[in-house]
Image (cartoon, rainbow, N blue to C red; front, side):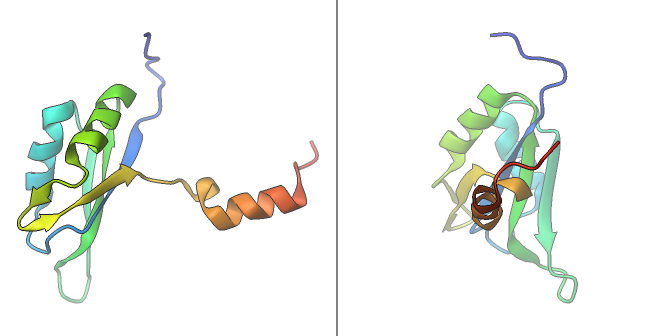
Length: 107
């Protein structure tokens, strides 16, 4: 399989993270599956604590799929995390339904 140098990295959603989990810890865990291009925990601006979810981007699709499979359901800091491919805005259910109702846009 040839991977294009222009391939879009896969963005992965991480949920049910312990509030104490750090970006550095996530980076180490996901690097077991290959290069991690981006790792970000979503923080509460008022408390400075993690909101319990974040994102990781892995450039190679095979490595990203392996990370999802290997990390989903894994216990980290006493919590079973949920890991899946992040949906882009266009992939959200409401937008897909709206696109189906209105049909293709004229060119």
